[in-house]
Image (cartoon, rainbow, N blue to C red; front, side, top):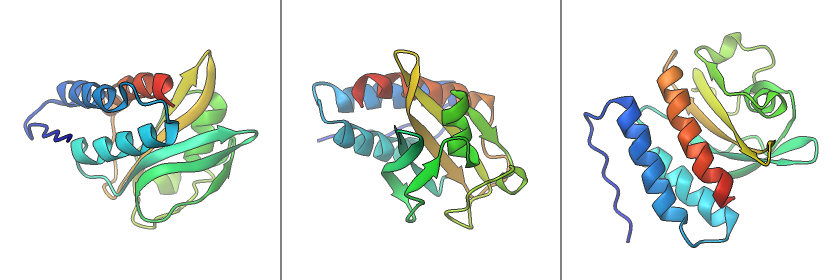
Length: 160
């Protein structure tokens, strides 16, 4: 049984470090990438406050395809370079978007989403997936969130 209970008063760097350790514990010895993404999405949901969506999109050919997530139903396929997720995947660069309505080409899967953080997962120098977090709060994500989620992306790179 896994019971991760992050302290509510942790600073972001410590919170994300604890999340990365928890995710690493969850994926140890499990070869199935879908199971690993599902458990990591659940851990994100448990650790990171003020989210309305947390999950993965996998790179398949010239598009992203929905992977395991927690939240409302989502867009299934996103062309590379389109929306926040497609931009992160195409550029291989983290996207911190304080106001999704101001992002050119934003794809609205959940009308309640106001800010977004997308971190690419790199393996052997190429993007294989992205981690996507949405929040109903404008400006929810900052550079500390981005750095922290990049730690999780390093764990994910070895597990998916």
